[in-house]
Image 1 (cartoon, rainbow, N blue to C red):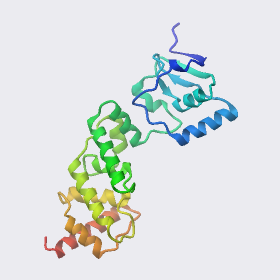
Image 2 (image 1 turned 90 degrees about the vertical axis):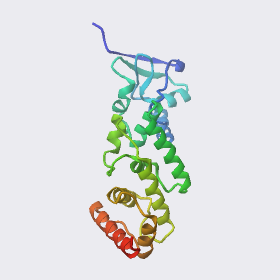
Image 3 (image 1 turned 45 degrees about the horizontal axis):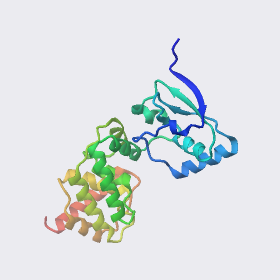
Image 4 (image 1 turned 90 degrees about the horizontal axis):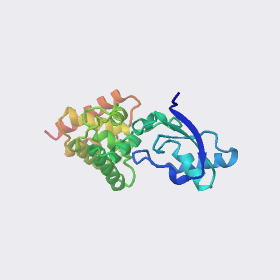
Length: 240
């Protein structure tokens, strides 16, 4: 009877291959994995497909190779690169992980999203977190389905919306506020307002921020009503 998997162990490290669309190596996690292996030994084999591409356990593999230890592995005929995120259970994939994986496979929207995320991260002195940029870039008014869309490949971007909201954030960042304009409480609401008003007027944004000590609400609906109200008041005062 043909089996779909078998066990092995080896020091022939060159036979194993990394998957380009796998998520990046997390140095903090790698350090913990290495410390654990050196203390109690390897407890779980890595999982590879029939081509010896590492599907699960790339951190364990690196730690074992670095310390010239035997690599225990499972060759699974059912393990595929397309299911790599489902098979990695030690740490769930984040939206950023999926975006990087999609970009490595040629997804144009994800490539642009990562480039913009890095640009704004540096431009804001590392205040604009990449996840916030992905939320702003995602096409549509909401942000709740970001991870799902990145996972299933339906993520599309709206650069006009994201750019306008980022400019509004930069205006707000130059004024006194009770919260950071780079946090999700503000960025998500600004995106909603952009859709509801078919754009954001930066003069109105400046006026509402200057005349209100904007704070963060625990409830998103309350935050939206508050910011919509002060935006409309500022717009009326400027007679726009």
